Image 1: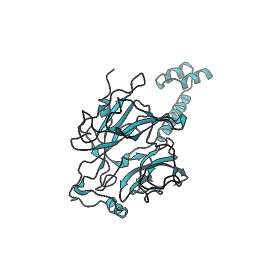
Image 2: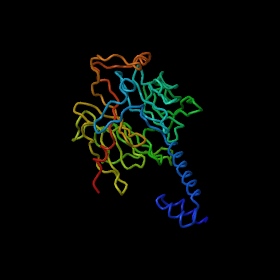
Image 3: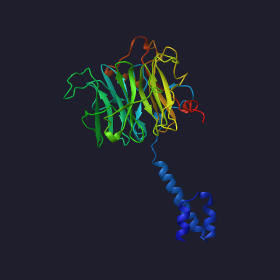
Image 4: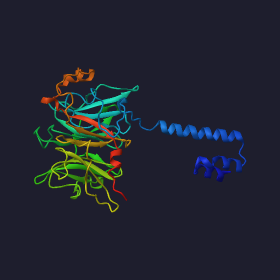
Length: 345
């Protein structure tokens, strides 16, 4: 009987009935065991992160503004939303007198009004990314360090969650931008000759020896704001100056080949990249369903729509709105657009 139970735990439920009958299990035992399995599966599913994306209707293959009037406003959002690993918190950047990291959280099935996270507001802060366990938040800031008193230079910082609060940020020794599941960090640095280029660093050497990606990703022009897939199967980034450019800055994707090298990057194409516009800050949602990115397509250029409740509350932070309404908004689209770009085996 012990052997039968061990077999049952390792097989599909399709064969469950046959095994019970073969071993002369009573009907009551079958019912009870089935209920245990169902209950266990239901409990496991209920513990998964719930990504309802602020109750927004999900987009299809055509990009749509994400949470208009709430996250994407008439003001200048400087980066895409970054959800915590459990899906209950979100940060993004809003431009005012300085870049501010804005924060919302889900409580009692409702999302809060965006407010600056506890440590932001005095200095320019952006470039945020969660640690994989959600206990740390890495970001860039122009706040002065002990070795650099200038407020005009970005340095790398990290804050640690202590209960429901965030600790005072401390300098971090590497620029954290996008982590894969094994802890490899993909980020971008300024080069004197080619503009921004994309690098990768490993956790084993404490991210001290970054490796510049090859010419299938980098070029003689600018590459930046990379997003790496969890399994490192693809890399999405923004780039300028290439022969196949559509807009001013476009999103590109490079797939990793079986030998571990990167394939030549492809332009993601329209309707994500549009003539005369900028697309950057790509990020795939944690459930893999959507591509988020930032674009400067004109939205409400004349300001004819009435202020939303959130936009009214944001005014206290003196948010920036450039002339002509080309303010920059957050867009999202089905990640199935990536499937169309995958190389044919």
